[in-house]
Length: 324
Image 1 (cartoon, rainbow, N blue to C red):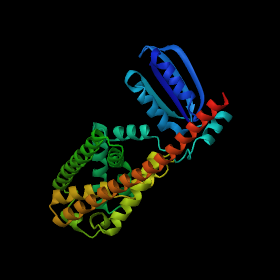
Image 2 (image 1 turned 120 degrees about the horizontal axis):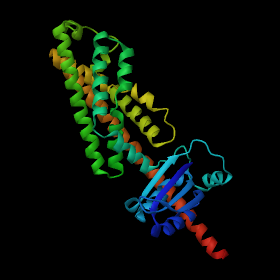
Image 3 (image 1 turned 180 degrees about the vertical axis):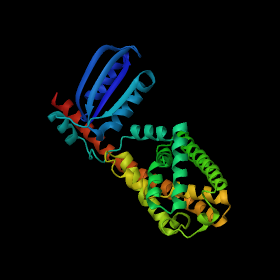
Image 4 (image 1 turned 90 degrees about the vertical axis):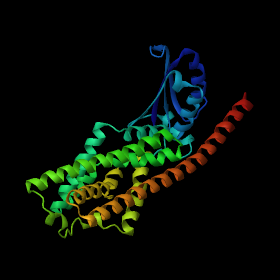
C-alpha cells in the first residue's frame, strides 16, 4: 500500500479528484481545501494499491500536476483497511512484485549524484580493499565490497536505457567513471606513501594470495556471477523486497579490482594491472547488461498488466454507465 499526497492549484483539484475517484486501486481519498500555501491551492491525499501507482502517476503527470504542484508517494509499512484489501484484490499483479517507476527513476538519480559523499565512500572502500589484498584477508575484502556505493549507479544505467532518461544515463556514467578514477588515484597515492614508509613492499604485492587471488584472475564465472548478482540487485531495488542487496555487494568484486589496480600502478606490476582491469570491466559490463535486461523484462511484464488493468477500468466504467 502507498500513501499519495498531491499539492496542486485549486483549478486542478477537480481533475485530480476525478482521476483518483475513477481508479479502483484507490481505497481512500481526502481533500483539504486551501491547505497548500506553496503552491497556493489544495492538498489531496489518497491510499492506493502499489500495483496501480504507475498509471495514477502518469495520469497526474498528464494533468501537469508535477509542473504546477507536487506529487509525493510514500510506502505504508502497516495498514489495516478492508477497503485497502479490496483495492489490492481489484488491481492486477502482486504488491511485492510491483515496479513503481517514478520511485525507481528517482532512486537512480539519487544514487548517481556525483558528490563528496559518493567519492569518499568509493575512495574509502577502495583503500580498504587494497589493504585487504596486501593482508590476503577475505573478511576485509567483503567489508570493502559492502562499503562501495557503485551498484546504485550501475543499476541507474539500466533504468536510464529502459525508461529513456538520457540525462540519467549521462549522470550515472559520469559517476562511475569519475568515481572509480578518483578512488584508484587516492588508493595509488596511499600505496605510494605506505611504500615510502616501508609498510607495504613489492614482495607483498606480488606474493601468492590464495584468499584474494580471484580479484585479478577473472574467468567466465566472474561474468556469470556479475549477471546473477545484478539481476538480484535490480529486483531488490524495484520491488518491495530489499533483502537481496547485501548479497549483491558481497558477490561482485568491482571495488577490490579497483584496489588491486591501484596497487599495481603504485608498484608497477603489469600482470596485476591487466588482470584487475579485466576483472573490473567484466564485472561492470555484466552488471550493466543484467540490470538492463531485468528492467526491460519487468517493463514488458508490467505493460501487459497495465493493459489488463485498463481493460478492467473501462469495463467497470461501461458497467456503471449501463446501470445508470
